[in-house]
Image 1 (cartoon, protein in one colour):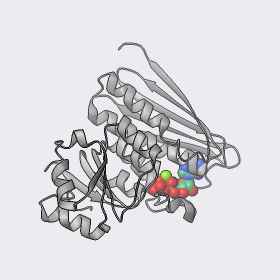
Image 2: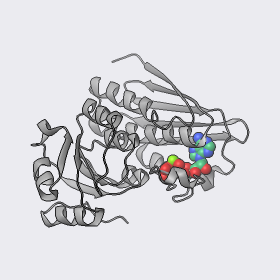
Image 3: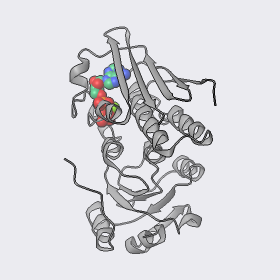
Image 4: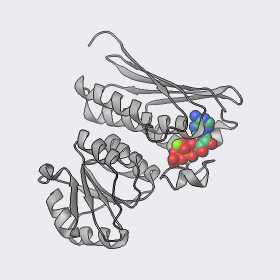
Length: 141
Length: 117
Ligand SMILES: Nc1ncnc2c1ncn2[C@@H]1O[C@H](COP(=O)(O)OP(=O)(O)OP(=O)(O)O)[C@@H](O)[C@H]1O
Ligand SMILES: [Mg+2]
């Protein structure tokens, strides 16, 4: 595996049933490539949290995953509404999710902290009214 | 303990995955919040939950959860069963409430992992 492998997915907002399809597909691909199970798990958890956020909080967008021999980079780009205060959003327990989301099992404000915990690099760029781009990297070995 | 031991301890029934009943489980977690499961759960565990939607199966997939026990008599629908089959995840249904179900497994020696700090 010397070249880069790029995987692309569209993420619809509010399609709760399908949320996680991209993450599941990435996980299966990494497994098939023989990537270390611990790395696969960290990528799957980080990406799934990010994908769920796109479905619940954003107007939809796209995910690009770039797999190279040394790292796995995940770029999650959505079309708004954006995050006003990213530092606040990163705090454990902070959530703007409505009650109906909580009854679906999400909205504890644990997603972004968990993405930070499971990835080696996390960058959030957001502009209110424009959109959010979350970039995460997990290094291999 | 194995998935079969979990099933017997809870007097539960298989929804799917009976053929995987000899799989070993190392820990368990009981929660209706998938956010918490994603943040705190350990590898190769059993998940006990009263939540019944496709994201329970997806969460299990990401976390390498080998068996899901639906408590309080919750029944997964066909979409969820199909998803679980494709992912080799065993589904069990139990009439017990969460507290009792967790207690019964604890009694049999299953643990939840180290305390959160
Ligand atoms: N892509 C996004 N677009 C807009 N807002 C977002 C996005 N991602 C996160 N946020 C905001 O950041 C907050 C915190 O996100 P985080 O993932 O930590 O928690 P949550 O999604 O509310 O709950 P949980 O992840 O525990 O289910 C969200 O409640 C939301 O206000
Ligand atoms: Mg979240």
